[in-house]
Amino acid sequence: MTESTVTSTTTPARSVRLADLPSLAGQDLGASARIRITQEQIDTFADATNDHQWIHVDAERAKKGPFGTTIAHGYLTLSLAVPLFWDLLDVDDATQVINYGLNKVRFPAPVPVDSEVGATAHVAAVEPVTGGFQLTVGLTFTIEGLDRPVCVCEMIIRYLGPA
Image (tube, one colour):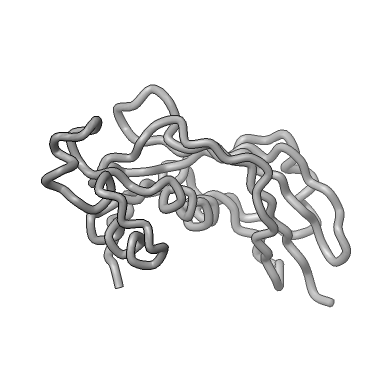
């Protein structure tokens, strides 16, 4: 199991009830805590996905590459959507939370090893679904010291209540 470093939360998680989700439409949820991406995490992700491209796992070769170090896989960065988003919103009476998918994903910049990745979230839409609500959330992933995002995506999450 890999170990990551999580820095303190920039914005406390907003706690809401399921019935209040529609009031979040159009709102920004703030900035999450940051998670440090270690070489151990990158290597473990490479093993799990069978993506051992040298830019991710060969530190010596990567020193001479375009970024001067190894970088995280784009999909490793994207996999942080769940913990970073949970840091921003807690629906305390939801009995089930479903990661329903993604509409759009882009990786505008690399994530060098030992970077701390955080995210901001904007609730673009809230729609009723059977048993609850579906949120469309724009996530923007950043690392300190870089002017552009490292990942942007539109995540779809369903919050359901008691049957």
